[in-house]
Image (cartoon, rainbow, N blue to C red; front, side):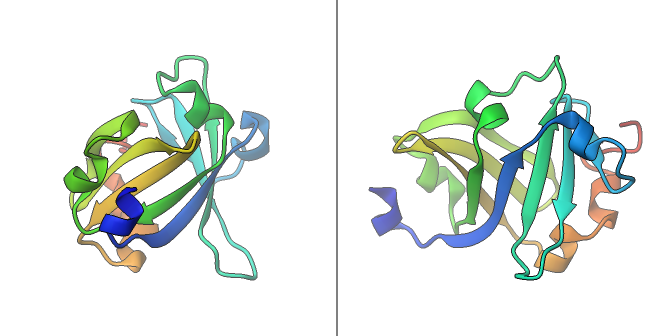
Length: 137
């Protein structure tokens, strides 16, 4: 229902994988607050795909840890989250980037509101001082 009320723009695909598939890659980032590993995968289609692996202490919803998700940017994330089944509460992992996850027809969907460029989001510099991926992780 909210899709008709709000313009969404494709951002990325997130795919859960076994930790052994990405942990050894030097580009893999670790998020201590979620016991989660993330690796951005390059491909010939220029589709942003993130591989996610989760440790035993991960507190995220089981559907996030087991099902792929599609992420979209939106103009007003608070409006988009209204009356939705939220499976990952809204938070700001780094300045200028807010996100949350909902269920749409039982499919996990990530919603993002950001003032950052794609270059800033997919670069490595932004993560250095973030809540999600920091120097201590």
